[in-house]
Amino acid sequence: MLERCVARGRDEFAADYWGHQPLLSPAARLPRDFSDLLTPAMVDEIIAERGLRTPFIRMAREGTLVDRACFTRTGGFGALMPDQVDPDGVLTEFAAGATIVLQGLHRFWPPIIDFVRGMTSDVGHPVQTNAYITPPANRGFDPHYDVHDVFVLQISGTKRWRVHEPVHNHPLPDQPWTDHREAIAARAVQAPVIDEVLEPGDCLYLPRGWVHSAEAQGDTSIHLTVGVSPFTGHDVATAVIKALASEEELRASLPLGLAPVDAARTGELTREVLDVLARQIAEKQEELGALAGDALATRYLDLTRPVAVRPLATLDALAVLDAHTTLRWRDGLHGSIDPASAGSDVAADSHVAADAAAVVLRLPTKSIAFPAECAPALRAVLDGGPVSAGSLPGLDVDDGLVVLRRLLREAVLVAL
Image (cartoon, rainbow, N blue to C red):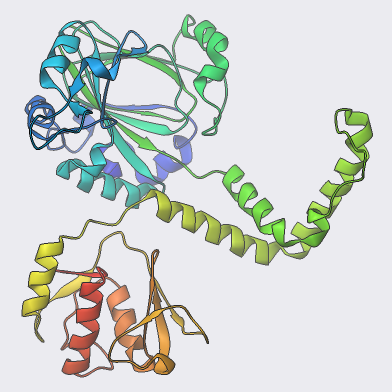
């Protein structure tokens, strides 16, 4: 999906733009427009017919959020939740100049679910998507920066974007633009790096920290903001520090009566702790690197989701599963195969005695044990290609059906 958004090759974009500088990609240099993802008619459908609730919708006018009571209410009999979108209220606020923000479209709008899954695979960092629908000649937010990278996909209408260099480079999630209001206001009156009107099909990439503002032109503007939350060196360092919590030397209390309000009094102790950190990191670099890698993997899995399973269709597939039924690994699900260890807290297949389990399929939310002879079949499944009970290496058809039924029931595999 990345190639849909940047008018550069992947390697050139990665080397020259990713995290460094903005890139404006005109529609004429991209493979196609973005009308398959969202259109004005789709926006109306989402607001009028999809039972949207906050916080999946918000509204803003001239940099200030509109009270959600102005555009939400209960859904009436059988749907009394009080935070459902009220299309009448949305119309009133939008006609008065408020921008509509549809948040988290990657969680409920099918075309964007697929798009974000592809983008996540391409960039290797968590991705999310919001839509901004702005009335003519209005803006939703003051000049600001984001703490994540964004790809702005112009859907319909036109919007003028002014982009300025950062006042705070590479901000972390806990370093919002509001910490630098005065500096941003001063930067916003200077000559912009980019001052362009985006037309439908154009895309603007902005690394986190770059100051920007946008204003709809003579008609209603709709654009998607594809946000990417990149992992940073700070994430690695934080993971290493957490891993060092196992070191007794660093857990020991500092001296009685420290009262660390005077830097001169604590300077020597600080240097001693830094020396310990440097020594521990040098001595255990490989171990700490592995622990930090595991921590980043865990966080990535917390922030991303595999393709959703369809429960009823899955049960139907189970009912008709035979030697020729073709299944495949669930897209976006991460797993690994490890030897079973004594006392492992894993779920063994009902056909396998607990003490006979010798190989474990480890998933983000659970682990499943199988007999040792299933290892080649599990590796074939993990490769991601289509499989059937009659094609699994090392197993006859009956045993293959047992394994595939379990994996289908556990939402590891999906039917083709």
